[in-house]
Amino acid sequence: MMELSFAYAPPLIISAAVSNKVFDSLEDGAKTSEQVAEKTGASARALRILMNALVGLDLLKKDRQGKYSLTPESAAFLVSSKLGTHAGFFGTIAPQIIARWLRLSDIVREGRPAVAVNQELEGTEFFSQLVERIIPMSYPPAQKLGDHLKLAKAKDEMRVLDLAAGSGIWGIALAQKSPRVWVTAVDWAGMIPTTKRITQKFGVGDRLNYIEGDILEANFGSGYDIATLGHILHSEGEDRSRQLLAKTFRALKSGGTIAIAEWLVNDDRTKPLPSLIFAVQMLVNTEKGDTFSFNEIKNWLEDAGFKKVRKLEAPGPSPLILATKP
Image 1 (cartoon, rainbow, N blue to C red):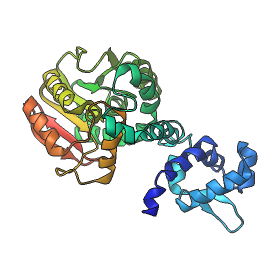
Image 2 (cartoon, rainbow, N blue to C red; image 1 turned 30 degrees about the vertical axis):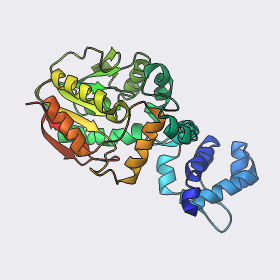
Image 3 (cartoon, rainbow, N blue to C red; image 1 turned 90 degrees about the horizontal axis):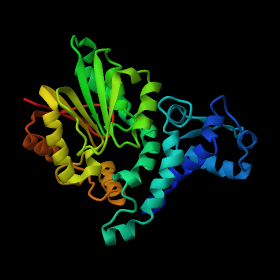
């Protein structure tokens, strides 16, 4: 119970370290807390206490001379310049999310979120910050999807529909597999500038086009080979998810594939713990959001007309869910 009572501490400790450039300052070698203080401008006493806690969290190492250095994990994921960094999430997004969780007792009593980030007016600013921060969560499974679909061997043009595209990373990863892949990214009007910027950064901006609007209202067109829903259904809730799957079914060509990334729970909603906690995250931040089981989503897909619903093991919180339009 004592461990649970301090469970709030690790993300806040990491956030403080990121914000004060602790990990960045150690990238070029081990330093004492005083040396880190000189480099960052933060308090030497406060840094010593914070960095000792990071040692306890196995995110820093400390030698007998009192010098701190990065661990493989912090070097890979908490240095801001690294491609796969989570530093931005801990530095800017985590504190926002935690502040909303502090209202959880009221949210449970009233049944309303702190902020409904799945709505365009409230959500555009939040997601404009979030989507680039969570690229490391989505890029590896998106690459695995591209390999599974053998896009590198495609002889004909392949059209991809990237729904609620955000950073565009699902479409980006697929486009990187072959010059024959063309992507249509759909998202709120306020999000599209972020999507364009990131697709240009990854060098595939010339093979994307963009549709602005709510995913249930925008006109997708038709004839797509692949549709991706990268961590979308959990914020939409069951009713909107069912509508979206039916609409996606109509947009795909016969033989087309839908790929869904989610935080899956088991049928009894008793595990895994991260997905159960993520359901509470949806309670805090959305009107109807939740986490769902593979079999729930499988039933929705089959009701929409999809066949061959299956799992694809891929890096990330859960396997991808794939299905085919007959």
